[in-house]
Amino acid sequence: MIASKNLPFEEPLLRELAETYGTPLYIYDEAGIRRSAKVLKEAFAWSKGYVNYFAVKATPTPAILKLLAEEGMGFDCSSAAELALVKQGGWNGRRVFYTSNNTPDEDYRYAQELGAVINLDKLPYLEQVAKAVGGYPSRMAIRYNPGGEGGNDIIGRPGDSKFGDTEDHVLKALEKMRSGGVSEIGLHAMVASNERDPAAFGRIAELLRRLAERAAAELSLGLSFINLGGGVGIPYRPEEEPTDIAAIGQAAKTSLSPLNIPVYTECGRFVTGPNGYLLTAVTHGVVESYRRFLTVDTSINNLCRLSSAGPDVYHHVSALGKKTKETKEVTVVGSMCVNSDRMFKDRSLPADIKRGDLLVVHDVGAHGRANSTNYNGRLRCGEVLVRTDGSHKLIRRHENFNDLFATVEGL
Image (tube, rainbow, N blue to C red; front, side, top):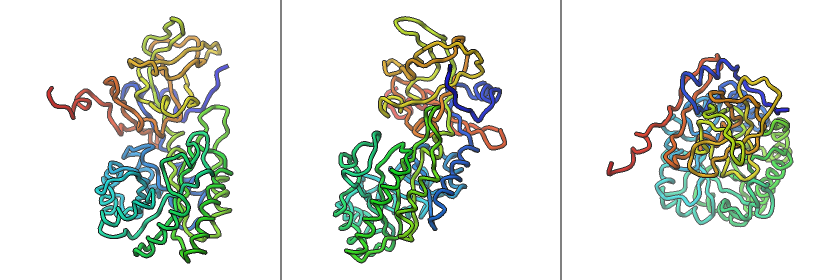
């Protein structure tokens, strides 16, 4: 029996998208994105001044960012390019949270020009910021790394991470910020990835609360906000239960609501991940050798997280319009000249699948198109938004060879 996941689109619409725009193609569900944004906001409604700063690196597509801005979100940026992207969208000031590491002076200046909250990675960077921008910014935070506490199987042990600083260093930074005239001072942590257990976020919240209380007791310093980070996961496998975002919000509330300051998050995957799909067409059908291969018109360059996110990464694949219960175990491959281009290994798909059929890859709305590459001269595919009224619009065109060679000389 073939496991299934629901699609928000009817088969005729998907076929229309394939005919209109070509495949492979990323497709986003506006209704689903807005729905995810609303339930996230509801889960943290207990925090006055709550904002989710959407992690731009998850889906750096302007049309998607615009939807999220309409839902009241800000933007979490971690590079100068992401700052430039949100600037072009007209978002600045409190709408932008800048969390970087190993950052050049010009990037700090750029963030300051936008009026972003500048979130330091480590204590020594504080003086760098002051020199780069001519004084301390008015709104700052620092990233806390709890060392041996927190983390999960995906992100690893926090103490082994390059991100964030120790508790004592964080306290020194907070004191320096205050003496330097920073008017709004906050704490930040990000110690989990694709985590769905509410208790994990409860532990992160408790660690931040304890550090906030220590700052109050030892420094007489009251924080202006706490950023709980992101890392909220989604159910990639059909048998997994939906993420209980309300329970995650309540777990955070238990520890953080007594502080009576705004709580922020920077969720990306939870918002867009389940609401993006990759549509691809079967090319030669099933080709048998030592293994049984199913060839398609995308390669792993359009979904690199299949190779970069670890051995247990999973995305569900649906064969459009197939009714048969008879299955065939196949490995889905593209045409890239690299052996890692075996995207879905030993998958049970309908036995009658053939050339021209369409496959839909689920849950690729975050870290999908964003994590694509031109390796082997492969062109990255376009993106389409399906609006709430069922209409659709191309929001990023397919690349062409002119794009590929635009930065080279000597041709």
